[in-house]
Length: 107
Length: 117
Image (cartoon, rainbow over all chains, first blue to last red; front, side):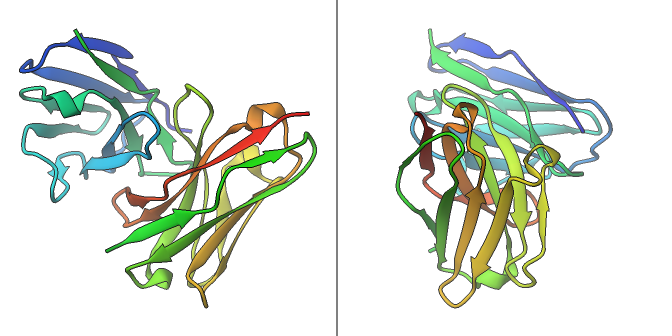
């Protein structure tokens, strides 16, 4: 199984901050990679797929980059509605796996 | 608009089975695989498996094989996930999600399954 290691697991930041979350895969997954945002009590919401493609309707302050085994999600200027937990996912092979999550909280 | 609407919360005793439904609307149901993902309280996301509504083919994560089944009823655009031999650590929110071949673009609202004696 492909392991996804997300870091950090917890992040405290202020509105307007630039935030970076990293996800490292245990093997090459090319660009078969996605990022999701989840708010408490809600289902995950797809933000980015194919490692760097912004889903329609997602604000442009979200940016995904990387390929192979190292990926990054950057939020250029954190907004109040961005405080949530973020998960990475690989869909290169089965079983589909998710990272452990990064909780972004207000400083 | 695409929607996946799941069945309500369930409380089950250890050893019992639970069947969760996921009713799709707003798209051609047979054109996209449906996956099931669960999330234990305060924990991360765990993928369980998929079903191809067009063929009925399924694929399960190894840890659920023998205990899970996934079916569909294409006449009403519904998918079902049944998990048997329930244990306390199966207590979780169960989600269905549509696979658009680049991840999961639409999710159900989640169904809480509580396993307790």
